[in-house]
Length: 244
Image 1 (cartoon, rainbow, N blue to C red):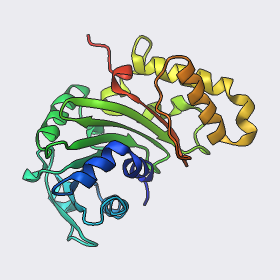
Image 2: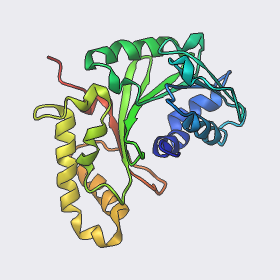
Image 3: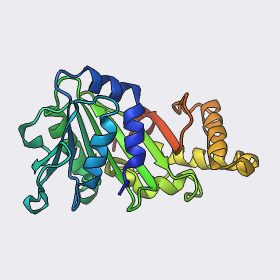
Image 4: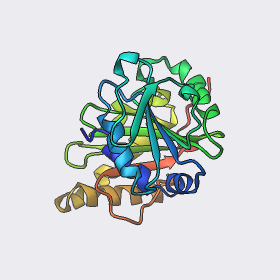
């Protein structure tokens, strides 16, 4: 329960996502691959209703045995990357591509993106079993827009500890010479430099870490509101894998 709360919090506050959901002629959202239990889909629906009360959420699972009766205004059906013929404005796909080879990611993204409504968005990511370490890519039909890492301030020791939950497109790229490795190395270095703020708590230390990263040329997104989580969001082109 609440395993995807960090990405949900980010979704309902992100200006681009909020705007697309609010402006959609049909506020349809698909939770793709919700797994053995639909609880995270129900939680997503409850949170999105704060953005748009008439949002429609459909949970899709490729395994027919996992399709459950609808409840709390959420419908469940069988479907995969083709989205069962639906045209959602937003798709969330968490822990779906971890079982696929890296070379399958681009085609899976393309299949989902082709099924979106005009202006639709895809959030594709990964988290650990308790949701303490999360990472996701936000995409539109033009391709990836950003990478976001989010983690529990009180159980994760340093930014690079999130590397084990990088999305499939990046998890094998955390090696010297790749941009994601450069970013995580710089984040750990900045975290170490911000150690004098540790007595004020990990959130204060992380805010200073993000400032150091920006001073060093990494365009880490600033947030006006106070964040419960440590969140590192950066344009995709900063971390895009080096082409072979």
